[in-house]
Amino acid sequence: MVIKKTATIVFIFSLAMIFFSACTPVKGYQKSRINDSEMELGARKSQKFEQSFQLYREGASGANGGKNSGGCGCN
Amino acid sequence: MKKVYSAVLAMYLGILSSHAQVTTKSVEDTTNYQSRKLKLDEINIVSAYYHQDGNNSAVTGGVGTEKLSDFANTFDIQLSKYDRKSRKNAFHFEVGVDHYTSASSDKIDPNSISSASMQDTRVYPSLNWTRTNEKLGTAFGFTGSYSHEYDYQSFGAGFNYTKISSNKNREFDFKGQAFLDTWKVILPVELRPPGYGSGSEEDSRGNVDYRPRNSFSGTFSLSQVINTRLQALIMIEPAWQQGLLATRYQRDYFTDGSVRVENLPDNRYKLPVAFRSSYFLDDHYIIRSFYRYYIDNWGMQAHTAEIEIAIKFSAFLSVSPFYRYHNQSGVRYFEPYGQHKTSDTYYTSDYDLSKLTSNFMGANLRLSPPKGVFGLQQFNSLELRYGHYIRSTGLNSDIVTLAMKFK
View 1 (cartoon, chains in turn brown, yellow):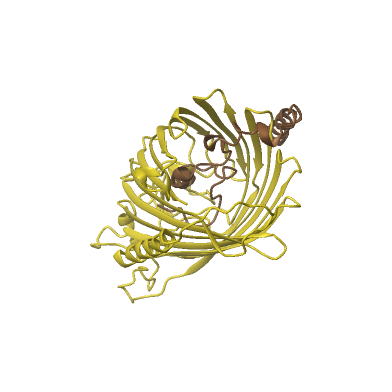
View 2 (cartoon, chains in turn purple, cyan):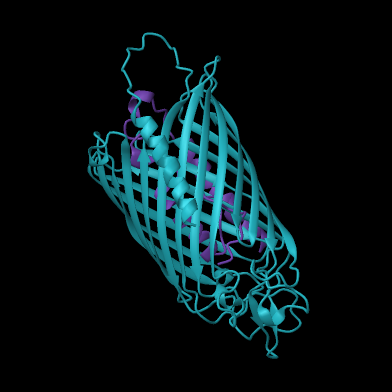
């Protein structure tokens, strides 16, 4: 079971590393699309409270740019 | 409650009016000189109304109403200033005020007119200072935060570090956080030992216990521009919680008909790993995706995936429908109403920790006209977002959020 869980995490990391290694250098003047406001990698400001209620209504949390711990979340 | 909102509103209007009087002259920059005056970068106001209903309240042992409404607001302001060495010092102050009403919390003491946690207001200010050295591509900063509600108090501290590659295509971020919390231990009325208080401010009879809950987390993220249309991010956020992790006013019913207060281990280790990407399909469509795998030492595993497609009607108007799917295995201590064994050491009937799947869907409207929203130059953007949440346990909820940015 532990091996399976570790393998899942290693697999996600490996996939990401392969993804990252496939990148091509992008110059500053070529970033008009990357710099589009809708391209932002973080969560939107308007998702802030959504992430809060999901943190409380589900047992899993974290790694989404929102809060992972602290606070009671008891309601 | 009204006083808090009035104070926040007055502070916001004061800042906005003082900002409105500043006339900015465009001066041709022939040198690399950076003004060392404190500059207002942006102000954000986010308000949301959340409402849920279900029939598995943990306060009454996994049965009963879960009706809850929450009106949440945050106001944040970001200021910056360059120092003599051309390093940028950014100050980010945020204050949040939530007010909720909860039908299930009212069942802590069903005989009272209004029990301890039927409704509450949470106030949570925070301040972050970050120093950025643009020449070196590095930044570091510190955060202090505080949160207060009727039965819960939290002090937080954090450290953040960023390193950007020389071609600005890769970014590494680290964030370390610690929350030192204190919880007033409120017990269900029929399970209070003789002399134990209700926890209500109006009730001075009997004392109540206070227990700590401490949380520590480290966030490591690496983002990369893959090509001119695609960028991605991987994030890992190990966390450790220690102290009172059970909610003592939640009841658990056993096979022999007896009832006890919830009991859970004093330690919890969490390990979420997430992957996020944004793809610029063409001038009208941008695809944002998110996936997370989660595991903890209470036996829970979860998969969460989200996709959002931003449809751009123009450079300044977009509508983004989204869909999120979540699946979790449930913690090993969960059993429904009346099914806990008397030999169990740890037990909960909190359906938030049960095996479940959830679907969340909605849309985000974003307006950012070049002349400002409603023609107000400093009203930079407005976002209106609605989402509907359906959980396999029968809980449904709706959330509507309004986010406004002023620059």
